[in-house]
Image (cartoon, rainbow, N blue to C red; front, top):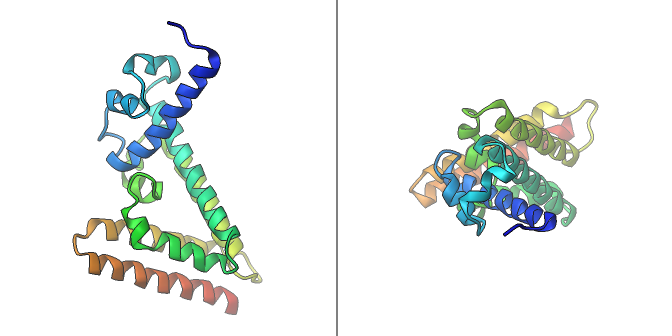
Length: 194
């Protein structure tokens, strides 16, 4: 039975959304096409009508995940009078540590993405640049751009959540997040005095 163009596009979006979550949960190589399609409520048969390859899907799912993460940061920042503090509290939290399928794709897939094709890595670079821009905008005005400070903050944030997810000791995991949050605040405060 043939599906309409609208239904085909809806199916394609469902696959990208499911892959975005499932890749973050299992890694790029930790889940096969059959399970990716099943996660979208579809059969594997239609995959190659919608995507050139698993790499093509991985690139599109990565783009979707990074765009969602950027929108989430922007929404949190816009909804709070202290945008940077709200972002720190969201990102460096035990709740985010547990959000494996919907959390930060840099944490969930960073090391895995580094081993992927340029096509799959490109959305991560774009997403990193978008995250840096948000951090720069949230820091107080200074004489010069705060790109280096934003890079340090993002590195610290991603690293702390990554390490916290590795640890079995929840108390130690929480300490990593809290120490990182304090350091991110210190970096941001140093931008005020620069």
